[in-house]
Image (cartoon, rainbow, N blue to C red; front, top):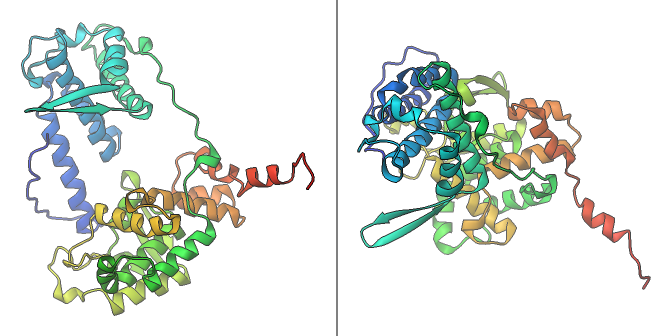
Amino acid sequence: MMSKRPSITIHNKSDKPDNIVMKQNYLIEECLQIESQLPKFMRDFFTYLKNGVALTSRLAYLNDILFFCNYLVAETGLTDATIVSDITAADFNKITAKHINRFIGDYCSRYTIKDNDSIKIMENNNRTLSRKKSTLSVLFKFLYRDEIIDNNITDGFNPVRLPKPQPDAIKRLEIDEVAVMLDIVDTGEHLSEGEKKYWEKTRLRDKAILVLFVTYGLRLSELEQLNISSFNFNRGEFRIYRKRGKEVMMPVNRTCELVIKDYIENERTPSKMLDNEHKDALFLSLQNRRMTARAIRNLVKKYTSIVLGTTREKGYSPHKLRATAATSLIQQGFSIYDVQNLLDHDNVTTTQLYAAHKKDAKRQIVKNFEWIDE
């Protein structure tokens, strides 16, 4: 379990905004905290992660490895160590592919956490199991290459079968549903009385957030990090920071310029009244602090749940609005390569999933293939 997040101050000499640099340093501190718990013989592997993968991927790798090492200590006889940091390279040399397959296939798929008189059952789907297997593959290949273990056992890892993504299973809003959602933000219709009290104070902010999501297909982290200084309306562009810290300039269309300016000029608390930490943040909470990822996610789920006619918990996540943007752009006739570039997909096959989806295709097929005439 992670300890309480430390207070960090930074002396930022880069071109990146302070909030971006601050977030990166919090992630680095989390990585270092996990590394301090892991065996010392993995030190060179930590350096490899530091220089070879994105910061969020580095943190995910380390969490998976810590989970595996805790399993070695608590559930196996492969080590005499009582704490993870005391596990030795010799202990790792005892591990075979069979041990990994048991860990992935038996333990990770369903394990229990005991807390006093309660037992919490944890289950992982195949996607999570595949990620854990991938983490261990990277670790064991590195240890073999670095001559810390004698054999490359990764060829013996059992495959984890993942279902192929189906285009017609992609969850997103239709174009007309987006219009309904934006109308709801304008009118407050179908919100509860309690929700309306907040809506009256945040409707311009909420609309700006939703318009940015469905126009650009931004990732949640990309939108959360936006600042007022990110936007240059004279040039018609704004700056975002994508995965791996990649800086990208995005064009601002007329709709987005209107909703963002409306929010800044008519609803957002003036920067001069804010603490230094939050005065540049674009989207503020009612406490005049930068909105958290969780608050933005809940906002999106609230408005999409009304459109979908379901509970707030079953509303769509920001990632589904990313899918909405991709599908809508392709339905409007834009090239999949242009959409790939806009959404920052690493592989065009991801974008092709949205291109393959034909609106109401199944419905039209069966509608025009009747066996009985009325």
